[in-house]
Image 1 (spheres, rainbow, N blue to C red):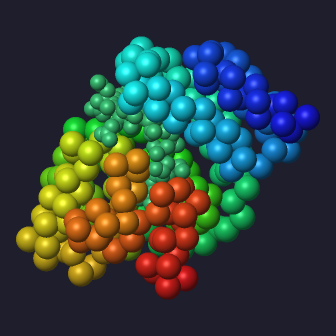
Image 2 (cartoon, rainbow, N blue to C red):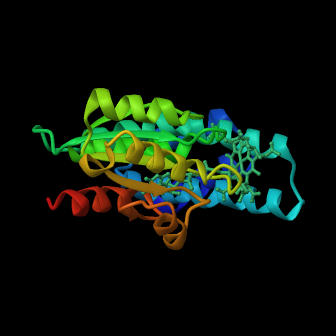
Length: 214
Ligand code: B12
């Protein structure tokens, strides 16, 4: 049954069928399928669409269709993650956002949800976040971790601008910076002066814990 549900989830994304995606996400939760496994099926499918777009076989409306279907499924999956969280006390404060010029939201929101489920207090600044807004949020929320998501190679260097601005404001020592998203590699993360990187959302939780020594 699990294989059939995962197959249908995948099909819903590849068919750009939001209604089916929402329904099969509910089935997945009802069947007791791990939210991480359901997320994996959705992510693989949407990346397949992204690869087709990258090769020039698919077009922007295909990306939009797949993204809409994925976003129809995500609230159910995120809800399941939140319910799986057991911790009550806060492990620390995290500010997260997608860098300026980039409107990709799904991966960033997933990281925010998983950090919340783990027990972090997460302030999500959303997408297309200007450098100054990241800096303001560090001043006001005083997070232990600042997390930035970047899916476009053209705008990923915004992460370095944020790190540099934090230095200029004398805030860099007080906050750990982690980066992720499709446009980021380990080497790129180092080059922008980040403290941590991981290619996955569960990995983001591990990096946050590692950076805080918890
Ligand atoms: C869906 C999608 C869109 C949707 C986004 C909808 C939305 N509301 O988010 C729409 C249609 C709007 C879109 C637009 C564009 N897109 Co687009 N998009 C995608 C696609 C297919 C999937 C992205 C996604 O949601 N993946 C699923 C999530 C779960 O994965 P994820 O984001 O990678 O996140 C995971 C990890 O990276 C990690 N993670 C994420 N953030 C963080 C943060 C931290 C701190 C950590 C530790 C980890 C972490 O955890 C997540 C879960 O494991 C990708 C293809 C791909 N391979 O990624 C292209 C892709 C990212 N897009 C691309 C492009 C080119 C564009 C456009 C420029 C197209 C155009 N001509 O207009 C525009 C840009 C708009 C803008 N200014 O941002 C390219 C980028 C190429 C590049 N290297 O720069 C890609 C790679 C497609 C391709 N192969 O060409 N896109």
